[in-house]
Length: 162
Image (tube, rainbow, N blue to C red; front, top):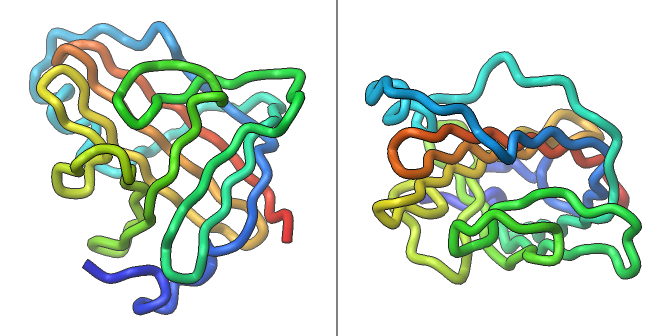
């Protein structure tokens, strides 16, 4: 696997501030096993509209190291799946790394052993955490399957802060 710098994809490195968010904490139930299996493997399309949000800073170094932190005294919290796969708030931010595979950027946690490009796959929860840089904005799309039947998709939009 190649790091961002080795591929010249430094568009994602830097400091980013959360400015919009969409989360579906309840998730969508499905009995379609094929859909559940593909939910975290295929690139997310048709992303939902986002609402203004703040309180989360993402730091990505040139070598792909990622630090995520909640802003001190943030008035609002957004939902986030912590490194262990538990749904919490921005206070559960975690360190990790960004790797490139097949032209896509993925976030992996330093706290959990990844399964391919999935940040977590422990039998109950599967999480794919993807970054899409676009100029001065960065989309982070977190696709989650719990219990092989509940689909979640969280979208975070960051603006460059440096």
